[in-house]
View 1 (tube, one colour):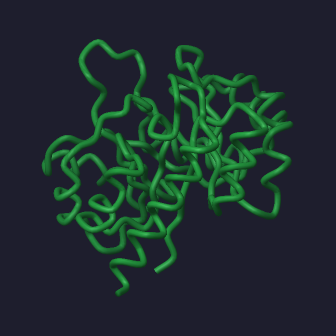
View 2 (cartoon, rainbow, N blue to C red; view 1 turned 120 degrees about the horizontal axis):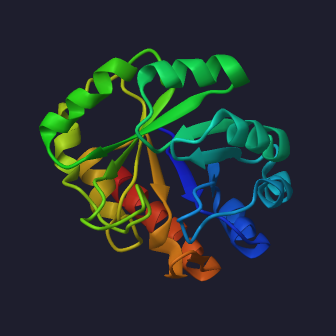
View 3 (cartoon, one colour; view 1 turned 135 degrees about the horizontal axis):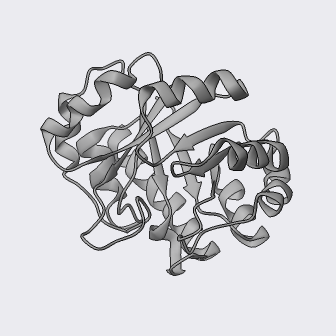
Length: 219
């Protein structure tokens, strides 16, 4: 099974180059002002050019207005929208129709019962991103570097397409792949030397750890 890998929160040419060199299937840009990974739509549009024909460019927003989304879509030309706020299934359907783009809906998980939250989005969202619930006091819906119990994903219907996110890094990706066997993974803070500062060496190390984990499972 092919494994999609998304490097999220990119802001520099160096980090972008490392993500693409490693074989990222998706590259993500954060349009949430409170995040240390925030990037201007025009700058994201410049950076995403390197990904054309190599990886899908994802615009990550949090309860964004139509006006801001219009600007992002115009200036960045994303391949996909990721909604990381409290957007409803109706909002997902509305934005899919408005922009003609696939939408990935992020949902925070901490226990098996949280999986019920995906039901209204089945058949509406094109994909899910499962992240850990933010720590108390955090203003960021994602990128907090915390994980959830990946074993709860065993209760998912086989047809649910998703990316696993939350606290992933080179040290634990082997366990994550073994326990959850996700179709896709998403990493942000786990390849940073400081909040919002992507480290090309850590990106390379992460891809290497993924390859080792997959080779071990295939052996």
